[in-house]
Image 1 (tube, rainbow, N blue to C red):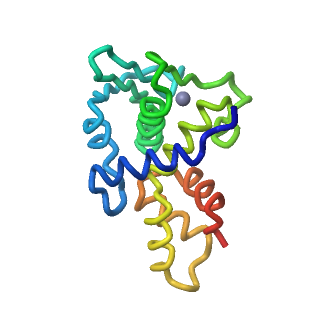
Image 2: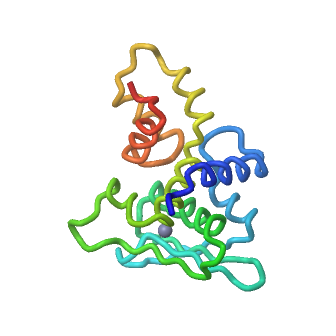
Length: 174
Ligand SMILES: [Zn+2]
């Protein structure tokens, strides 16, 4: 089965709309709360990014590695929300780091379809195309691409790497 990019995008847009999010940074913890997902920050000692556990009563717990950088934690929460909304048959999902050397942020995007879908959802949720489009047009005309990425990453509270990937995917990076 091919990754359901359109579904991931649509679910992210619906959530943003339901939560009346109009501008960055996207309040990721509030969105989790809206979905009855409780966030727990735990020091996973570098073993994993996070996990999500769905309870039978409709609530969920999202575990986030408290040792990761705040921007990474935001992406993890968004990714786990993606699993919650996209993979309803899974009660437990654990996002482990791959063995050393095999994984950087780019290759980690492509583990399997569920991961691709959850990553796509996360990108759509915390870096909505509509917001980025507007913000890019507000940047000075003569700004360097690197500086643009730095400013936008700060504004959206994401890593510069995540922002670079997102802008390239949207073909917004000149
Ligand atoms: Zn995952």
